Image 1: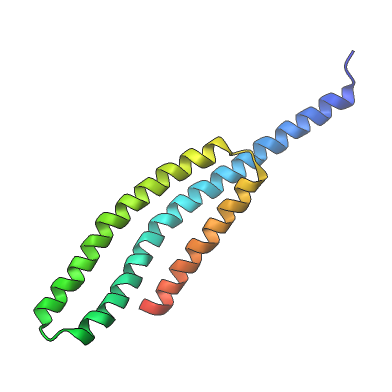
Image 2 (image 1 turned 180 degrees about the vertical axis):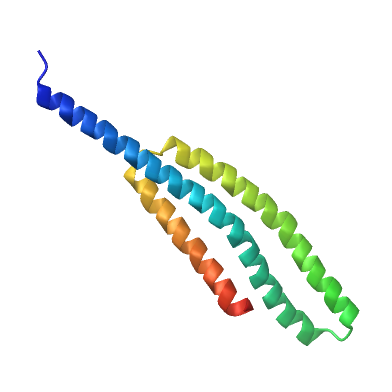
Amino acid sequence: MQNPDRKVILSSARAQSALAKLINLVLLLLSAVTTFFCFFAIQELLLTAAAHLIYHGMDSSVRQRYALITVRNVWLIGGGALLVGLTIGGFDYFFKRLAQARTRKRLLLILLVEIGIITLSRVVAG
């Protein structure tokens, strides 16, 4: 005969586990959306830094524009590949560990770093 208190404890643990999974899933989706915006924030930072370096070092304005376009294109290709790889790898990693408490800590840290990058981009690039 099972103890009725044990059933309550088990159902409470299942409810907490389901709630933890739901919270982690929401954080994961929020992180994925923030990653997309972070990609363009990093592009703004790169273009701001490159414009500062390029416009102080070259004479021809046509070459300067092409240099900035090249920097942007390299970032779009390389950064886009990195974005896709990190997104797929992150979803794979976190879906396997969705119920763990440290997953929430890692996702919150990722969100904090991404929000910091976006904020830095807004401060630097204007």
